[in-house]
Structures are given as structure tokens and as C-alpha cells.
Image (tube, rainbow, N blue to C red; front, top):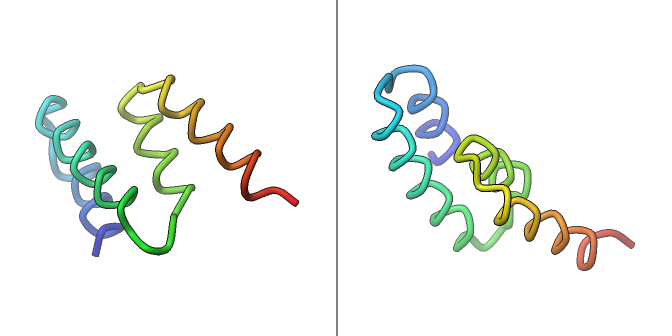
Amino acid sequence: MLKYTYEISQELVFNNEYRNDILQVILLIFAKSASTEYLDITLCQFLLNNSGALGSTLIHILKNEVN
């Protein structure tokens, strides 16, 4: 459902401010989900131009997920 909402927001919402609000909500939901979807989280952070959060997420992935 989140992926669908994300795709629709990118295709059908033309107002950048509203689209960013939607992405912020999607990002919060992704972050709270039981199965962490890092690809989706980092994509939302990238689209929001949130380099600080993106960098922190990538560092977290490297520290915790790479064996």
C-alpha cells in the first residue's frame, strides 16, 4: 500500500509542497514498519533533498546490515 501511495504521489501530485508533505508521511510510516525497506526510505530522503537523514541512514545500513 505504501509503494502504491508513493508511486501515485510521484505521478499524479503536481504541487511540490503537497508532494513533499506526502513523502514526509510515507517516510515516517516506512521508518516505523516492522520490515525496514531501506531502498524506499533512502529514495524518499533523496527526493526530499534531505542529505543529512540520507547520510545517517546509509551509515546505519553500513554499520548494521553489511556483514
